[in-house]
Image (cartoon, rainbow, N blue to C red; front, side):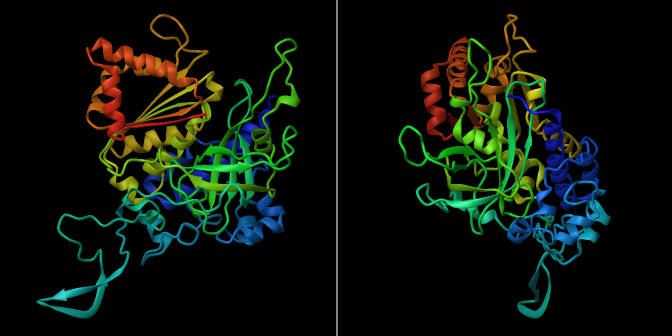
Length: 454
């Protein structure tokens, strides 16, 4: 069952809000790149921020009601940079010795003086303090970075579960919006949740959702459903307290009538896709370490997704190309995304990815590459539908060269994607006189091969 086109406008609103939020925390030179391609909508996606005192009371790090109203009732209708809705110096916790306005006005010419440290005079340590950036080591450029959750994965660790599925905690719905337009099949929603205090995760982990009610077959509570997290550790609001999910509504179409059979609808996906702001959701986790980013920032990453399998890769790319984090500044590799969808109207998060490419190119890094496989609109070399495995085949030389140089490759989506991909890669290996079995084993042993399918 398809939603009306107004739902797509709702997604534009959440993208616009996030764009304004991120742009405010970056230098002025980046702001235009974020804001220009995004259409402004006055949908009711975040109307709960204005209308529900219950929600507002639990947004501990969120703007006050007064600021939200002045900024347009939670909608991105204010010019980027005026900080009415979101102040990175407060919610984003960027900190520093200078005001946010200084950083925005001076743009790339701004020099950040982040902390105080003892200065040395001769061989003794003076009691006078100076800023660490005032006397940096030779050839070191001190820059501003959001770093207050970087300890979560130090030395390759991941946050342990905050809650288990048999004892879940409650998250509050802040907003939901349709990600695809009416020309695309099905329904895919972006769901934004406020997590309990202390619930943290890192990119590549997953969240369990326990739908309400009982299973009609067993009479017991529904089993938890696992969803890949689609946001960075700082969340879409950059305050470190939210999580975003990318959810496809599971529907069954009667082959005779072509109509949706509501008795066979996916319990959890339909629950999530129908959520309203202010509702609460039982969640557990986070779990998983298979899909986390490599510790070595010089390694290339290759991401292959179908449909909602884009979720962890959205988190990756926001961390490496959008947020002003240490990880972004240190990343020296190339990120290559291959996303497969049925139609152009089903391209997920495309405005965000387009902005990332422009930013990468503007910085002269040119280290973000994106290929789309739109199966109902594109064809492969023999005139058949184009799928992600065909893109890998077409660019086999680049793929193998990067893998042989230590690149990490990630796969996420429906489990039906993997047989075609493995077959295609085996053909590529054979055409180059490589033994695919031993080659794959090598990548797996080197922790370069990451798979999360469902």
